[in-house]
Amino acid sequence: MADEAKAKGNAAFAAGRFEEAVQHFSDAIALAPDNHVLYSNRSAAYASLGRYAEALGDAERTVALKPDWAKGYSRLGAAHLGLGDAPKAVEAYEKGLALEPSNEALKSGLAQARQAASAPRRPVGSGADAVGKMFQGPELWSKVAADPTTRGYLDQPDFVQMLREVQRNPSSLNSYLSDQRMVQVLTLMLDIKFQNQSNGAPEPAAAQSNPPPPKQQPEAKAREPEPEPDPMEVTEEEKEHKERKASAQKEKEAGNAAYKRKDFDIAIQHYTTAMELDDEDISYITNRAAVYLEMGKFDECIKDCDKAVERGRELHADFKMISRALTRKGTALAKLAKSSQDYDAAIETFQKALTEHRNPDTLKKLNDAERAKKELEQQEYYDPGIADEEREKGNEFFKQQKYPEAVKHYTEALRRNPKDPRVYSNRAACYTKLGALPEGLKDAEKCIELDPTFSKGYTRKGAIQFFMKEYDKALETYQAGLKHDPKNQELLDGVRRCVEQINKASRGELSEEELKERQNKGMQDPEIQNILTDPIMRQVLTDLQENPRAAQVHLKNPGVMQKIQKLVSAGIVQMK
Image 1 (cartoon, one colour):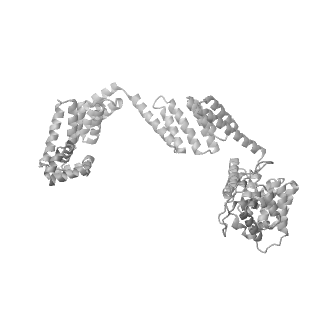
Image 2: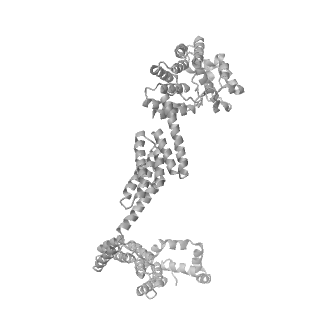
């Protein structure tokens, strides 16, 4: 984990995000407090932020942990120089050169420190002023020209003008630190420049590009320099670890390619090799689990998913990766399910995955598993024989006018056989007796849906609509039933009763209270509302009142006449 934090710090430093780099290096130090390289790296980040006191503290810690490491004295000298303490900077650089006499960075730093030490000291000064003085020496131009990362800047007139201005007035340095080129020169002069080139290696792309002209500001309130990236110092063990990770990633990519080709055996080999090279990335395990899932090897998939979750917890892996492993395990469990109870484990696993990360795909799989469980439960419970027994028990209780008990047995009959329209019809009759008209209407409609030729379904539905005083709808229901059974007396009687009620409204025979009740009920009907808001029907109603001749023409239209009849039935319109 310390290596991961260190890598993030290096990346942030390379991008010029020094505050973020400090945070990552601090996280790494918390995990590996005796690693001298981490303190050295954080010292460089602090120096880049101009926080030389903190840079000095980390440099001193670096030297204390690794007194025979020359680079630590380079950090120490740079921090002292940043704080304006040139004599101590000289001392630090000399100690470093005693360990590594050929180190050019230490030699350059020592020359700068000696020059700063020989210059007259101000009574009051700041670290920024001390750093600015380094730009006054004659070696500035030679160092900039000699360094491959800054050489090209001398061909840019605006940059040359900036350097001359800083030479004339060192305190103006802060005004130019928002320019990436100036920061790069500063890191060069401070010897915190990041050495990422090997002998004969090409120059970094950042040094080859031409940055835009600087925007001069009176104060450097927000500077975002982008120095050359520093790979920092790594041990042989760290180098080997990094190489193994890189090899594991290549195996993973090869496994992904094989998976896309449906070459599953080869994909498994690559993922297995990746797992052996790097046990700190659970994506190799989850990928292999995905291959097993595709191959139908569900038990192997489940084992890999369990392993991924366990290892992921140990590594504090991303919760999304844990969720992915659990989702794949749930999918495998669902594939293995043969009974409704088998789905319980899959449902529980999907629910755990959602607590880690609420992913739409996982949620869909959970819903599918719950639906499949319910369907299996119905299939397992299905028994037409027992359903008939329960229906007969319900009939007996109905005859005894024990309607709640009858409903109970009819419901059990439907659980045993949900496709029997007779049971829905009988339960609708019970609900009607109990005054539960909406429930009865729903059962009657289900009865008709299961068997459109079953007359009882229409008589049940029509009766309920009649009791709800929806006479026009009841009339339509009875008439629909007569299409299948034209001589059914119950249906014929239903039609007669509905017509009588509708005619009462058209003849104005309703009491004021009845009329008001029917109108209120009608106004709640969406169909009635649509008729009243229809521009054509509004014109028809106006003509009925003001232009009888035009109204007669409208009434010849069957569609208009049907809508008028609905309004009459609802008590909205009265025909005299």
